[in-house]
Image (cartoon, rainbow, N blue to C red; front, side, top):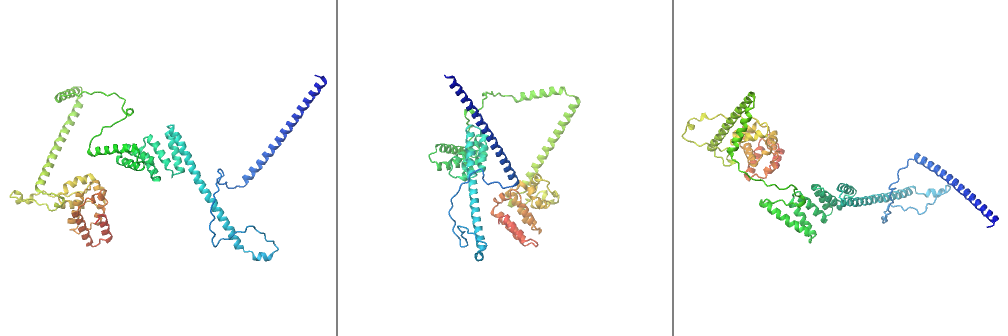
Length: 495
């Protein structure tokens, strides 16, 4: 190569490198100046936004959907806005005289109201659509967790989906399936019930609710669910199988047959079966062994311990003898009462007759035991105990009921109220209280407040209702009894 041309080529390369450096330097300076301007503009914008408290833009994160709407019918009071607003010159006084200010204000108000309602409707519908999309997203995420057997996370996602869209029956049914896997059968049943309420033709909800009810031992309800499922899907083999199985179980339970428990291989106990041999033991041999063991222990006991044991044994034997005598005395009293009184039904109370004979009882009636004045019972147990001794004599029962304030009837009678008990009390009210002119309106009303009164009233016969009617008619003739109380008693006793 020629040395002159090589030198020229080298000079050319050097100039090109210098020009490239100058170009890059200018570019860096320009870039730096632009970034400074950008920062200054951003600082000015931040200062302006801080000084001006503008409200946030609604739905700024989501793009609104524009909905085409039909034009509303034009009313008679509607004012058509002018297509092009013409400005009236200040010197044209005749035009200002003809200008209708009220008409212009009405047009502005109509335009503002129509635009605001359109925007509000659009926002509500868009919010509803957004919630439904969020519910679908949560449902899909819950399905993914369910496939990975992460049941807790799946239930959380389903719950969020239900909160976003409570009208989606599928999410309720999916959460019920996860609850079934967790063996929470009561909650699963409730979710299936909610899904069926939203969509009565949802077959999966019926199937899952039937499974939950079957585990809860609600066999009849589960059978109804399988029958409803079979109506919706007549070719469902599983529903047919379950219906036949449940009907067989219900039939066996109705007949009182004990059904063996059948478990799958993985649910059975892993412990091996043990054969237990049955041995016959002589009772005398066991008694002798026990006596020997007791004698062996008493040898090593101290004198004080022996005294305490002997004292306890003596007191225990006395207690047994006294309780035995008391039982025999009660039995003899009951047997004599049964012989002397012929009570075949509660209606015979008050008509008790003592048979006459030529014995000493006829010549010495004054030797009968005096009647013991009853006391007010302290609790329901004492009332039940006293009732057995006073129910056979209306006079004694009358004295006993007079000791009890009527406000204590619900507390003392409580669960003890039966049809025969109610009948005897009403007979006492009729034949004893009203005979002495006692106003028993409060007694009748408080008696109706007893827990089992409404159920006991269903078992009252026609003769019992006649007793109540007679009481009401006699109460109406007593002075001071209000008609409102009579109506209340009639309503409570269903007469």
